[in-house]
Figure (cartoon, chains in turn brown, orange):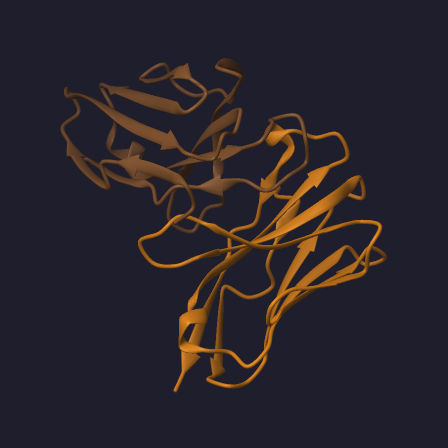
Length: 114
Length: 114
C-alpha cells in the first residue's frame, strides 16, 4: 500500500447527480493532488493543494470542485458531469509541492458518467 | 505537443529476459526524471528516479539510464517476472518545478510471455 487511500473505488453516476470522491493520506505529507487519467492519454493534473491552500487549478471546469479541510484529506465534489468526464481519478501526495520529488498515488476512483 | 513520450505502446518479452522501456523528452531544461509502474486496477507506483547530474542509477532489478545529449531515458528490468506486467511511464520536471511542471508520458504496456 502507498499510504494514500481513495474511496469509492468505482462510481457510476448520472449527469444530474452530485457525488464526492475522497482521498486520505497517512504519510504526513503537506501537498495533495488530483489527477485525471483517461485511456491512452497521459496523466492530467487537475488541482494542487499545499498546506491546505489551493496552489494550482489547471483550467478545470467548475463542475469539479475540490476541497481540502486539512493536509491529510482531499475531496473532489462532482456535479452535472458529462460523459467525457468518465475516467480514472487519481489522488496523490508528496512532502511539499514546491520540491522536485516523487508522488505517492492512491488506487484511484474509476468514474463512469451515464 | 507532449514533451515526454514513449517509442512503443506495447512491449512483449519472455519471462526471464531483460526488458528495456524507452522514453524521449524534448525539454532540455528538465533535470528530474521518474519512472512509474501502474498495474491493472491500481494507481501508479514509484519505481526509480534520476537527476540530470547522473547518467545511470540502479535499484533492485531495475536500472535507469539518462542520455542528456539525445534527451533519452530508459528503464531496464532484469530477469523479467510475471509480476512485472504493467504499464510503465516516465515523467519529467524542470529545475525548480513543482507539480504543475511534472509532465507524464502515455505509457508502455509491458507484457510477459511464459
